[in-house]
Length: 201
Image 1: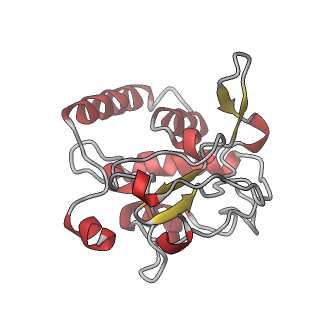
Image 2: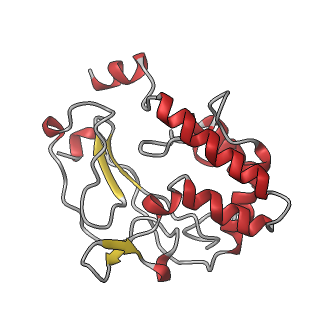
């Protein structure tokens, strides 16, 4: 039933506010494009679009609120760390995205449980063996490594929004993000594979 519902409508709604915010982000990006290095532009884009919010585990901050762990920047869900699951009956639909646990790197839903990927250039557990083409095709197709047979990229990754005809990111912006990711310190961290729905409740 969940698969049928997911096939009938997109996983993410594009609202007027989303369009406005994305338009402002792109305006700032293009106005700064010639003033910043590709690494700086990529860092800016990953920050504004919330990439670090999902792909970087958190630690308690000064006021007990979670903040990104600077030692594990963009390294995904930590290997071997248990996560509390949310019964699927408590998840209303595919738009009801609630992180499972305090690290904000595991996400339950009708698809099962997805884990934020390791985007550091570690060759064994990250994207160190990827090419720029692999990265861009992943965003464009929603398939792992951009391969037609690759597994589907699951929520909350908003790859459809990044391809929106009005406010989606151009290849030049994705190339800047790629350069930034390649400049990160590699972190060895094997993220677990997604769990199907029958194992996530």
